[in-house]
Length: 194
Image 1: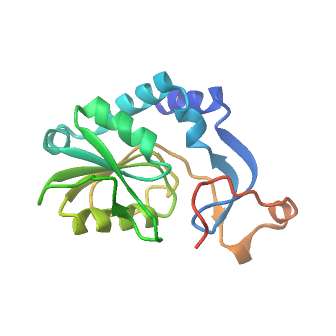
Image 2: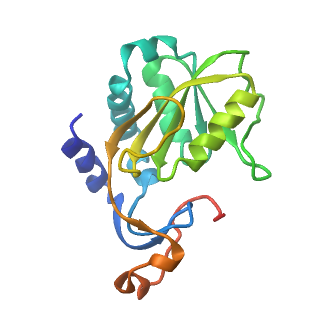
Image 3: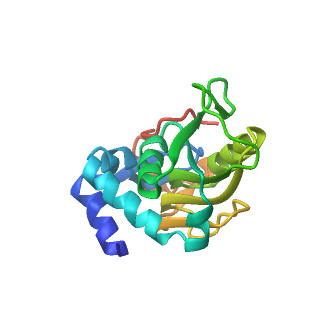
């Protein structure tokens, strides 16, 4: 799937939003990708996951024993990636602010894991999830996401494979441009701000 085809999927379901958004990282943006909308159609979610799985290097695909995603945003794409790769898909969640496995989910010692996210903006959630996976005994061998918003700058300590990269500028709270600051900020994500 080429970048224009991926963008077409986002546009078709009105998942590429414009306005003033307060991201879960605490940064501000004039653009927001509502991955929940692009994933609400099971057939579209399947197509995107299959395209993302096809981007994984063959040697990584062969090693993956389980897919792990951070809740809430990564659950659907993680599940679809598990289906595309033919492995189980589980998730970590933050009941008390720190990612952990719950619901009877377990990892075998040294089990090879693909971390799957919907969007990577700063990499903070991904790094926190990788830490939780390691604490549970798993070994993250690569990370994948539908969208990379870091302009290719994120370092997760493992290979990172996005389906598409967007380079929309984001702003720290004290750096928001005047034109953007005049609009009320909307927090469309699922995570509380830091």
